[in-house]
Image (cartoon, rainbow over all chains, first blue to last red):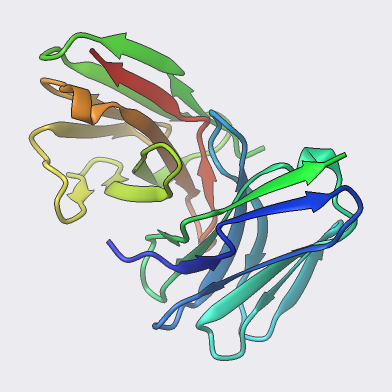
Length: 111
Length: 116
């Protein structure tokens, strides 16, 4: 099935640094979602975006829904060790309940 | 709120046997549940969409006779992997959509299936 183009695939950063990752698609999505998955666990929703151009924050996390509705980015500021995990973007088309996932960004934070 | 559980959390079975995985929404009613499969270091791939009281809708390439889905109530969906083979070994994750106008899905913790 289709997947979103998510980059980077992995990131190694120092504690305190800011992180940015993004997802792009060749087609339009009406909803963009960002999840975090810890090893052996299911994904946990971080931020949901429902409107083109929307910029939403959740603590140190900020995500934006691209104006073209074909992309989204997630920023994490002042990273901490517990930010370690795999971050997935997911898109949802209008009229569909299905989520299309990106391939994930594996984040490693060095103390 | 919005907690989804899965049982078992992990299971090891012999090739040729069947395994049932349960997905429950603990504090809400879910008209729609979804089953995903995730191979190591890969993303989640939707297998099927399950609506309460009706037949599941399977994604292209997913064998409906092999992956039996039953959504018997608004809080329970089951996935049965029939005649399991080693290539069916994977991490199976369900999600549940709250009944209503919202689009948000809540994911279970996953079930690790290993077929020997």
